[in-house]
Length: 134
Figure (cartoon, helix red, strand yellow):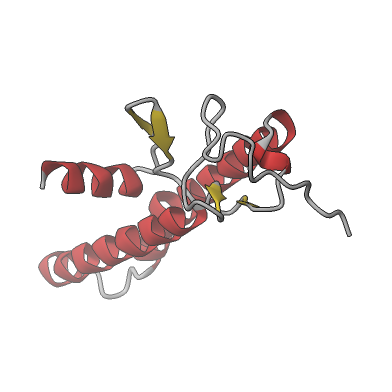
């Protein structure tokens, strides 16, 4: 249960990978960034409901909009940009990145449903096929 909460906190904070047993599964993927945005937005909206009632901020709706921008949208944009750069570097530098079965949005080998890393190739190169450039 502790691992579950640690993973949720990593997603909310948009943090990167955890290494276990020589394999690494990315905490940050496109889906986890979107999930983090949804969770952060929900938290801000819930907190803003309480603050609006307590401090009577009904005329100051822009405070919530600014909070959504600086605490949700901008950090998610920066993390997605960093994720895209990391994925582009992974595609250029590794054998898995040049395989047709590699899914760059989740850094996943779609044949074996495992996450390749710089030091770990899920199939060992046996199922590798070149990506078709159309």
